[in-house]
Structure formats: C-alpha cells, structure tokens
Length: 51
Image 1: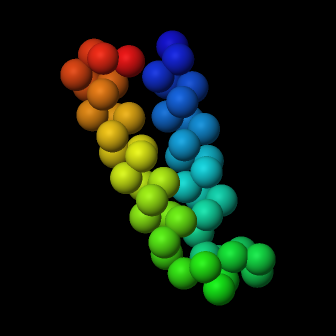
Image 2: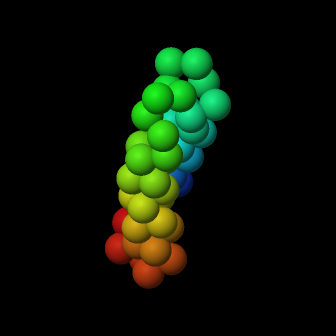
C-alpha cells in the first residue's frame, strides 16, 4: 500500500517537473530526469517485493 502511494506521488512530481510550465521552462529536463530515475527505482523495488 505504501509503495503504491509513493509511486503515485512520484509520478505527480514527474508531471509537475516537465518544462512545459512557465515557471520551469529555464530548468530544462534535469528535474524530470532525476525524478524519473527515482520512479524507475521505486517500480523495480515494488516488482521485487521490497516495498
């Protein structure tokens, strides 16, 4: 249950960090890439049954 909630929150952060928003256009894709890596790690941990 905790893993699912964590995954949903991280996906929302990933969408919010996209550079299409006016306040984040100068950031580039760096925040999206960092959060994307965290999402991949959480998915792998969920599949392995660690979380």
